Image 1 (cartoon, one colour):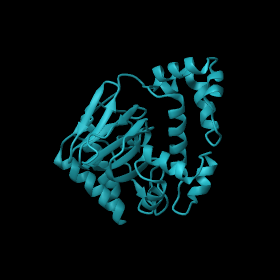
Image 2 (tube, rainbow, N blue to C red):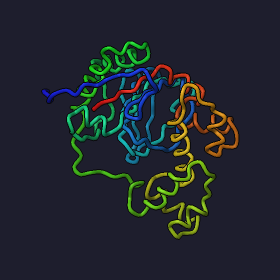
Image 3 (cartoon, rainbow, N blue to C red):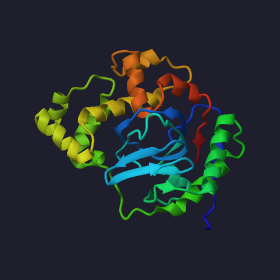
Image 4 (cartoon, rainbow, N blue to C red):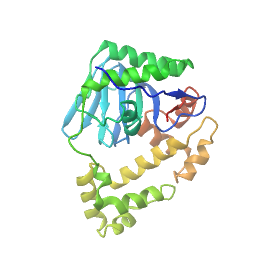
Length: 277
């Protein structure tokens, strides 16, 4: 497959940007609750069996398999066997950045379970370079990975928006986004869309697949995650987002991210941003 002119990708030794990041999970043995990411999530399973619960069924991925979720796709990750722990690496790539690498092509993945030794090799090569600090070829390896994954995607039939971007929830989601550092209550969220808390909870879950307070907790965790830097004070961050204490923050963070905020902060020293023009 021939693509147009490649756009240079430049790496700098600073904290990773919001366009692409990675995380490594070792021996995961707890469930991930329902959540979504605003990015594509591309995971290579190293050990164990990953289970993804989607709206239309379940996806089981064994070692040496790549699994993919699309942006805003609500899913959960129940543990298959707590004695057979799962280890995996995940790349988070924004839709805009992925489209940029493909010269403006928009896509979504229908084939979200890929078994291809060549793609696995490229994925591993990229992760090794990011972790080792050898970034001389990382941009080219990243583009090679995306081009290898591209045949497993399709052009969306129409512009897609998640339920969280619907007109009905716009005011509510905006309010939540602007008040993540406050303590939010179910009653006050229900009043914004003029429902009692029971009717609100039912309608929100019907539209999105998540309960309102699960959504709030997820957004708090992911917002805090984006503010973690190699030298940040995690206790201050926990209180800034109105968690009871650092233990409450760490427990919630691990539920949605897979590792503790301290472990995530330690991994940040391995990461570099990918910037483009």
